[in-house]
Amino acid sequence: MLPFTIEKNSQFGRFAVATHNIEAGSFLFDEIPFAIGPNIRTYCCCLECYCPVDGTASGTRCENCSWPLCNECSKLSEFSAHKRECEIFREAKCKFFNLPDANATCMQLDCITPLRVLLEREINMERWKNEVEPMEDHREKRINSNAWKEDQQNIVGYLLGPCKLGQRGITAELIHKVIGVLEVNAFEAKTLKGTFVRCLYPRLAILSHSCTPNTTHAIHPSDNYSLKVRATVAIEKGSQLFSCYTYTQKGTLDRQQHLMEGKYFQCHCERCLDPTELGTHFSSMKCSSCLFGDVLSSNPLDSDANWICNKCSQENSAESIKEMLKALQGEIDNANSIEFLENSLEEYEHLLNPNHYIMTSMKNSLIDAYGHINGYMLHEMPDILLKRKIELCDELLAILDVFERGMTRARAMILYELHTPIVLYAKSQFEIGNSTKLKYLKQLENAREILNESREILEWEDENVCMIIWGARKSQENLEKLIASLKCE
Ligand SMILES: [Zn+2]
Ligand SMILES: [Zn+2]
Ligand SMILES: [Zn+2]
Ligand SMILES: [Zn+2]
Image (cartoon, rainbow, N blue to C red; front, side):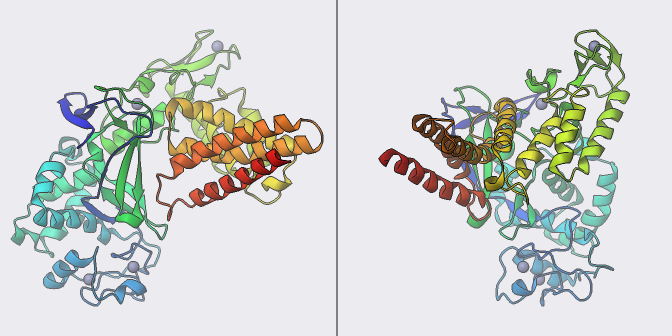
């Protein structure tokens, strides 16, 4: 039985309400996708396994229908993903048109995922009616947009014309509905080969959006792309379940723009309404007038609203703020070394709040770099840099504890990055006589706790895609051994 009931109101449309108290980490539900297929505006890929295929005349094709398949899949005696559309294309004699060059975007593949939804509908009408039909497609906002006109020609026209889907009772309205449902609701998943597909999970779509969600989901490509949803924090009976339709580690302006352009709504969550983003100052700039205050948007939901200093009340136009952010972002987009990132962090300190998302993304890049690039591998890092990595992880975690609370993948990744420098720093300090054995043991046990929490969360992922799980398991084994040997001495 599902742990939630479905309710409806004008703000959220359909939404999910917990039927009982839910503990952090609890499994909530799983589901298999209604359909899986290539992303929109994608490169040319195999219609069975989604690996890249040469789209020019020299690429491999399906013997039956002439559409792209990789070498391996073209030899299969029976298809799974490609099966139904293969019959449609063959019967209607709809040939694939070779691309002029191998790097061109393959617009012809835009029709594949909608077609798969339509064909699944025919054999699974009950699930269509109960789960997919009620999904939001924002027809009224999409109609007559440029994308709509492009879809009309490229997808609707193609499926009804050459593919003759009209003979199966499929209408232009239905195809536009499917395109809209996919556009608003589909999730991107990574295949076992590391490429990307989009999947439609109707049950997950019932959960409303929040920029501080209380659930998380993992897609398991090695288990038919099944989706598993869990609570990241404790959820009280009667509370709403939220997932996040955008990126929690973007500022309010960017999140609002992404949601409006891709999902056609404005978010009114607590975080979006608060100019300080729940006290984190994730979008706050430093005041150039008093050099002391934080400059905040006077209305975070209006991207044209003025920004005002919270100490001296100096006003800045939205335009000047956006220009400055664009310039700073442009500078760090080309960041290519630890030195550059560290220098930029220092330089930007008088322009941005230390928690600003640009600062945070630089800190994230540094966490990824320390311990992973030549000259900075963990075992060659001096204590001062080990401490620096620990400090950066702590700063990141403080922000994630607000935006990605509880048992989330983002926290798990940072916790994983944090545990090794703690171990190495503690070891080094013990070896040079700066700490006692007791203190050393305590630090190791702290690292073990951090690693355990990380591993517990990572175990929810598909181990064939999320390779870091293997690293976490191995680290745990080594750390247990180290602690045990120290206790024996
Ligand atoms: Zn293939
Ligand atoms: Zn085929
Ligand atoms: Zn929000
Ligand atoms: Zn000021």
